[in-house]
Image 1 (tube, rainbow, N blue to C red):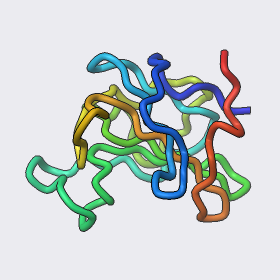
Image 2 (spheres, rainbow, N blue to C red):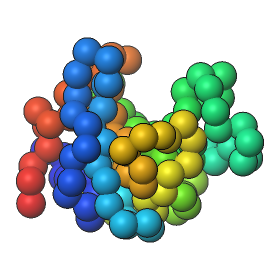
Image 3 (cartoon, rainbow, N blue to C red):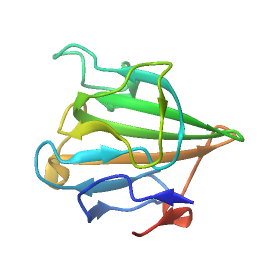
Image 4 (cartoon, one colour):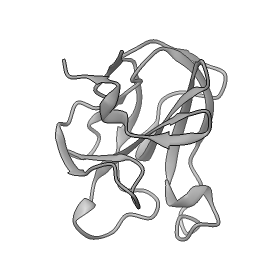
Length: 133
């Protein structure tokens, strides 16, 4: 099972046809947690001014991607700060970043975590796998 990926609990946008993630809003610098144990395969924070558009990391801003094995990965986008590095092994529930509004953030979403779950390279609804603790 996967744990809830943030200390915040307010879902402002769910998984759907055009939005392949959960957006979870909370206060600035709320901790974002590894949903399951795994290895960090991407931890990137592009320079300011390079966030807009789809050319650079799809607008995720400061993001972390964790490989959990069995072709399952999770993505944590829009962090203000990243607290892990590529190659780190993280435990389930470990803080990997602090919530922010970096990247292509607009409208009512504001400060939030953009949380994606990929299986075999395809986005799937993370709500199916998360245990609400």
